[in-house]
Length: 411
Image (cartoon, rainbow, N blue to C red; front, side, top):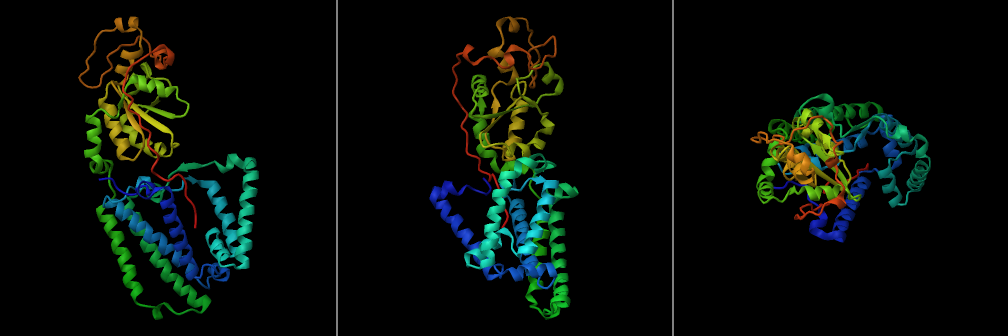
């Protein structure tokens, strides 16, 4: 079973998917407008604690989406790895948030609500939208002056469970309870500052809705999030068939060809222990022990769409285990070096080098060849010249389009 998300273009084609995007955008704008978010006075009132509708509506949307996303992930219906999460640039993010916050207070709009106001021909919304476009232009013309700061304090896909060191379910339940307490406290503040209806006089069904949210959050906590092993079980039948049919083990000659293909971003991961890696490894291969391979998955998913990842060990056993982890964690375009490092040396090392070797124990992914010195990639066959070899092999690499989103944004 392959969890969602699925690529719309696979089902509806290029233009059909754009129709869906248009409908979603229209529905989002419509909901904002009927919620009163096209009115700058209503939006600005939250900063004076007179009307906290914006806080309650947006926080409700965030909490509901959070619960449904992690519930679907817990049930195996959704692959959370394929959902775009904005990478964290800590200090630029803080400064940008402060600038946007001041603009929100002064203008009464955020980018999304300004477009809603502009669509209904409100003059303040039109001016704010034009100001946003001018700000984008100004940023593009001046970013070179502060580019180092703009790209500083990068933390990758950094979320609350990672920051707090807590299971996702506990964080989901905690945020849900916190949000509900803030909503109730907000109603009290609205009563005091904005002379609105007291909490006790508002509809009672909201308590049932709040209880439902807490119950769903508790289900997320109880079920827990899927492990790498769980993810592999979902796709094992299909992927094991590819392994058995030798569809993902690429010939050393094909890897050599890819090493010289400038259209590709080639990532080679050597999962052997450090001592064997230091003896000999392919030029530009990264040393990532098998035990650490899962820690690389976030970075690998963030690589450009033209990235080809090839894992290797002395033979194929450990490389196959690494391949399973990467595939289970939704890293695209991952292959195994056929025959491993032993197979590479068999193919490209000189006859004199191979003749000087004595067979070694190959019971479990052992290095067949011995090296008198740990020269790493300084051997000539660490990256042979492509034109010196004419090899016959069946090409296996089929680059698939990156199915995960490559950008995100703010409403």
